[in-house]
Amino acid sequence: MEAFNIASIEQAGFEADDLIATVATKFKNNFDEQIRSEKDRLNSMSEKELLIEMILELKRIDQKCDDIARKIVIWSN
Image (tube, rainbow, N blue to C red):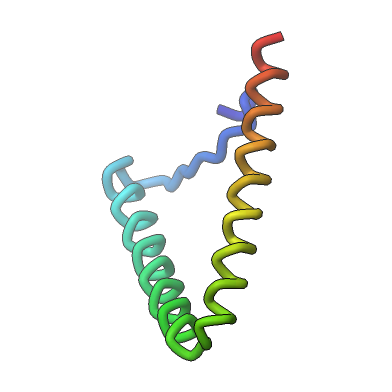
């Protein structure tokens, strides 16, 4: 895992399924909180602000797609 720079978790006395369940629960709780705060933020916006936010998000997605495409090209060489 280290050779490929992939994060891993080890804890003496615990099985893998216990660690996975713990990490998944923490991730879910954090994700749920992010969704709640994002919904609150979006509900407080005007239509114009929402449109601007959507355009900015599309630009971020487009940039991520470009980044992924560049990595694929590098990996394929």
